[in-house]
Length: 143
Length: 143
DNA sequence: TTCTAATTTGTTATTATTACAATTTAGTAT
DNA sequence: ATACTAAATTGTAATAATAACAAATTAGAA
Image (cartoon, rainbow over all chains, first blue to last red; front, side, top):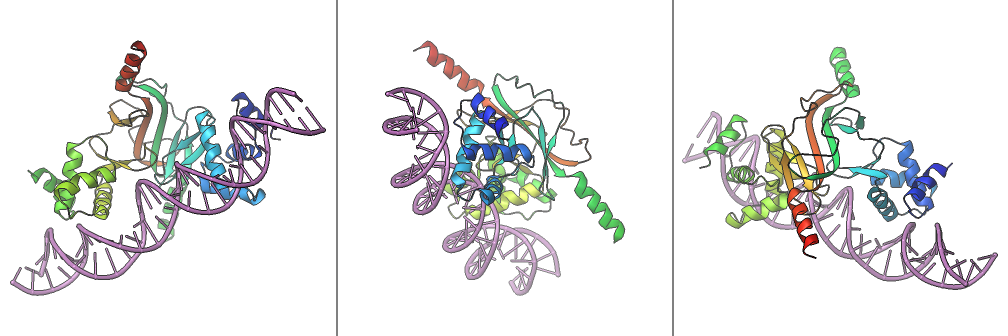
């Protein structure tokens, strides 16, 4: 059940702990780009001894190993995402959802003229998501 | 001297105050993407009565009017930038500098398939800037 | 010049994150 | 299997950015 996550940690020579496995599993099963608080409070339900600091520490080591990435799109807190292929993100200003956006971008090959060495690329789009637009229309029609 | 900034505020029907003019002038003359603290402490030198809250409030109203934009690239604090044509940003992980990047990106036309209405687009690149790379090389050669 | 709503100010509150020290544990060597 | 040690976990306390708020001030209209 946790084999997949055990292997990910092994591949990166990261010490295997139940906390790290749970966090990794949570991110793998919830592609909602949760913040630390959400990860912490959800996992705390099943593992009451979990500490917030451990969530911070674990995400940090996973990040250093490029297993997860942190998003600054919200502006007030970091959001976390399993790294699986380059993609961009869309933040809905109305409902707050952060959605994956798969678009081709010529700049995502991590090179850049100007001579800077690019190691990370993040594309952030903000606006109103499809779902919230539908709701808007509905409200207008119905009064 | 402040005419340029007076006009910008007038064009947006924003009440003209000396604080707003100074903040706008500072951003116009310093394209270093400063944070609130930097703007505040710099302007405080010449205008000792300035309050940090005013800097926050002023930037907020300038942002709502799309005169300035805030960047979340640093992850720990908002950085501010005068809005002048779409461009991307590069953050140097070594020296912390945030540099403007002028690259063409097909996604920057603010439309996006998937049905989301895009109102803002920000491209963040992180790595080591040209300048810091030069320093690295120099150090290696000299010992 | 007067008036009023908006702005500025200073302080206090909130929230995300980091620092730190004590306890526990994973994984290696015996 | 056992003992050992460095690393991880935990809980608490500190820090830093931002927001909330109420009183004093001011821009701009009447």
